[in-house]
Length: 388
Image (cartoon, rainbow, N blue to C red; front, top):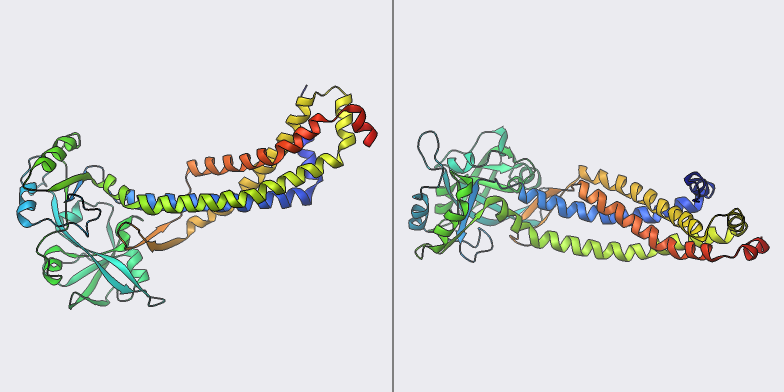
């Protein structure tokens, strides 16, 4: 025979203040826990979403980022000659030879300097990124000192707005357009003509190659062909996998740090839940004796108090998740540990984070309520009624 759930719920409602305070403590812990996971998920989604499934990035072997890579014109031509690269309607290879450089720019509000990615692209490079669309102005014309900026850069850095001028690489560049990359990593970049960027930064080699596969299933064969050619010393990666690696270090740091903080905070929440449940047991001694006298087993008593504690955790977890969900409206900027460049991204709440957060809340409720529930279950009928 089990104790009705309505009885468990009424006990929580009766003790409004202690229930609210304990749930609030758990809600704070779940809020921190969920926010950290949302931060890491937002970073991963921003960078992983930057890549396309059929696109391939080629960089110099052992390079961690495009900034560290160097590909000369002969190597680029050898890669472009491969038959597995898709072609456009006019018969041109869908490959972009790109130059990627880090420069230091002052932020719009604070004037504090921060690293920003400058990417020299070609018309093919723009076509290979369908998620990028112009929201103001137009795309930069090849062979000119024109640039376009991602929305995050335009909003966050001086001289990066529509019609403004910024100076780098010993020349002035005019912003002729602002693009939206669908909340991907390209929103934190400045684009211009690849050849102009190479000349201005006095580069003799490209940083990376980007191309589309004619047949996605041919990736492994093409990868083997590129990496086994001793003339090239290059490596090929699917674009989505390449950008996923760019987020790995920072997202792992955020997740480990946040989880550690959440675990420390959870100790206080568990103690609070334990105190609440012990107080509940102490104030309901006669009630426990009566339930035992009516025929409810020790297991039923244990389950009732444990369910009460789990419900407390669920209430706290739900409140914490609700509060954390509002963080999705915020966009923050930080330095990517992999590229050392400014990166803007948003908090992202996923079904997995919801499940993890509620499981974490229930775990706190279980740990905090088990010992008080066990104490209630061990009470003898006579001793409980006598204590009343």
